Image (tube, rainbow, N blue to C red):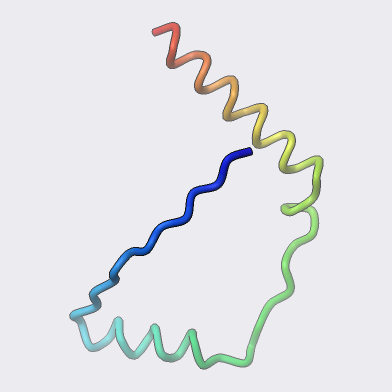
Length: 60
């Protein structure tokens, strides 16, 4: 499966958004990753769904 890396500048102009971003980045309240969503089976299922969607769009 291909991955894409890129650099993107993000500009936040609203003071409330800046405060929220700082709050999220400085938070110690970290939730664990749901292992069911990151399992090999879930990845394979997602890839199959993507493959089907792409094949449908090529035939249209």
